[in-house]
Length: 162
Image 1 (cartoon, rainbow, N blue to C red):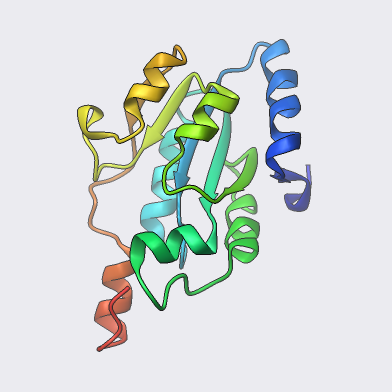
Image 2: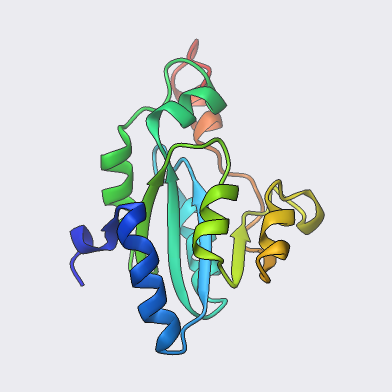
């Protein structure tokens, strides 16, 4: 599947997930801004894929990144961030979402697993209640949280705080 075919609208994501489920696949959801892709992102997504199943990555829209990270962010537009994430071998589908968290998407696609990075503990995942209500579970994956786009920007571009 080419990278561009991995990037789906929300309206076409659900039928794709239904196809995968009918074939016996588990659905794993990961999410984030993915502004300036770094090794922490790669390790997070690799860890999510290793849970076994089809990995759907929800990428925050430009407006939601701005609301979460502040003015000056994102560095790259959502369409480009989605294309870069889709190019990763471990990723099966990418969708852009405009909300501040993925609760609505969780209710739409009902993932078997929501994978979150190590900056969370299972009990601190904001959408944990929605995942459990949909019959799924939360897993923490990736390496220790010592990679951050915000910190990369702060270290390399003094005066920029995103």
